Length: 134
Image (tube, helix red, strand yellow):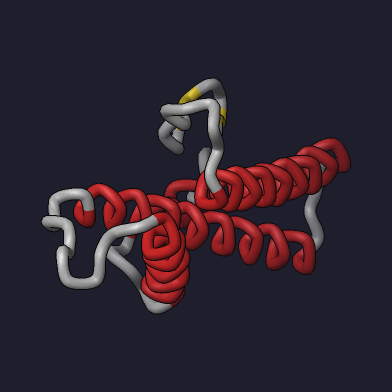
């Protein structure tokens, strides 16, 4: 994923994209579409000059939702990198199915962590994006 030409997700190492890679790319596209939609709403409101209270409330909800998603993405990247340090399990094996299951588990785990407060990154991002600039 790129925002302002900065990579947030590591690039795939191989041209053979697995189911996990495909899933990540789908989530990345969904996040990008939501971010673009929020940006269009913000630009529309900025052109009109004044935002109504409902528009401000909706904008703040969208910013918080995007902040939580960003924290979940960050936590998932952290979990995946930490998992690489764990030795392979010889008892149960280590195959593609287990990698897919582990990736889905980490995704859901980090989503829930971010929704429950996570490490505070979403709150920090939200405060930075909603502070009044005078």
